[in-house]
Image (cartoon, rainbow, N blue to C red; front, side, top):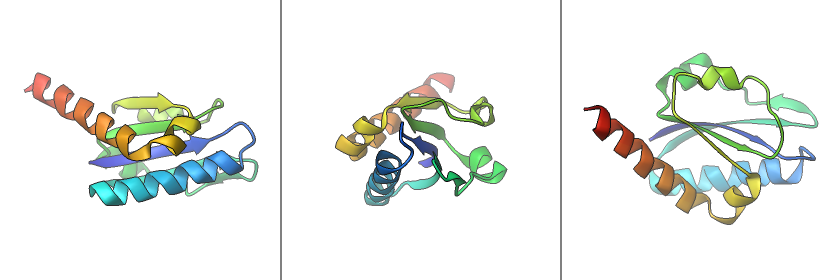
Length: 109
């Protein structure tokens, strides 16, 4: 599964980067490809490219605050969760998202 993600917490420091690290590890373990943009106190880092978004199966918004640029994901399935859920159970979350994406694809066929 190809995932694009935005991580942002209320302070823009701790949970933003903790969620990013947890998601990267979980995606690697599951064999998924993930690209993560962070929006925090120092601005946007690792901005997602139009190509990454176009190739993605899903957009994951792991956010506790309003983020910018979410209209980029209008053409792909989008899941929004808080950073605390990502920190607690990143692998379970990605597995659940993958199941839902597969179900959506099979319904379209």
